[in-house]
Amino acid sequence: MDKAPEVILAKSAGFCPGVQKAIERVRKLVQAGKGSVYTLGPLVHNSQVIACLEADGIHAVASLDEVKGKAGVLVIRAHGIPPELEAEARHQGLAVVDATCPWVKKVHASISKYAQQGFITVIVGDRGHAEVVGLLGYAGKNAFAVDGPEEAERLPILDKVNIVAQTTQEAEVFRKTVAVVRRRGQTVVVSDTICKPSRDRQRETVELAGQVDLMIVVGAKHSANTARLAALCRRLCPNTVAVESDVDVDATAVRTARRIGVTAGASTPDSLVERVLCKVSGLHDDH
Ligand code: SF4
Image (cartoon, rainbow, N blue to C red; front, side):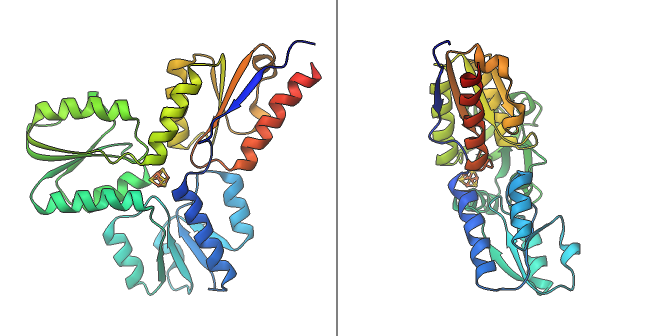
C-alpha cells in the first residue's frame, strides 16, 4: 500500500462566528417557546442545515408577504437587511430579532456616516448577494456596487466617495478596486470592512493551498464565500476541487495526491467537513 497522504484541515474551515451566533440565537428562541420562528432568507446557504432547522420549527421565508398576518418572531439573519425592510417588518406587527453580524453592522455604520455627509458609496461585492442588498439600503440613492477593478473602471468620475467591502470580499480584489476608485474620485475614504474571520480564512487558505497538491473546498455551490474561497485556492493550487459533500469526492484525485488540504466556506457545517475527511481517509485505506 502507498504511504497515506497527509491531510491538513484548515483551522478556519466551516461556520464563521456570525453565522454560528445567528444559529444559536434562533435555537434559543425555539427553546424559549417564542412561538413560530421565521428567518428572512435562509440562515446559511446549506440545504442540510436548513432542513435540520426546519425540523426544529425554524422556517426560512423569502419575503415578508409569506408571514403577513402571522404571529411569531422574525429573525434578521447575519447578512442584515435594508433599514426600510426592517421598518416594514416591525410595522407588520412581528416581533423582530436582529441577528445581523456585528461586522456587517460596522459596514452599515460606515455607509450611513459618510452618506449623511454627501459621500457616494461604492461597495465592492456581489450585487445580488443579500448582504450587499442590505448595504445598498443604508447607502440611499447615491451608491454603486461593483464586483472588482474592471467594473470600477466603468464608474463615472465622482466627487466624494466612501468605498467599502462586502465582509467576505477577497483582500486583493478590494485593494485593486480601491486603486481604480482613487483615480475616479476627488475625495476617497477607504473603509476596509472585510471582517476578521474572512481575512483570517483567506490568509490561512493561501498558506495551505501553496503547500498541497490537492485542495478540497467543501461548501454549497450557490454559496458566494465558498466560490470565492475555491477561486483563491485554485490560483495557488490548480488541483483544487469544490465539493458539496463527501459524495462528490473524486477517488482518483485523492489516491494520487501526497498532501491534501481541506477547507470549507463560512456556511458549511462541521459535520459535512467531517464526512469529507472520513471519505478521504477511507479512500486511501481501501486502496
Ligand atoms: S462572514 Fe464575517 S461578517 Fe459575515 S457573518 Fe461571518 S463573521 Fe460576520
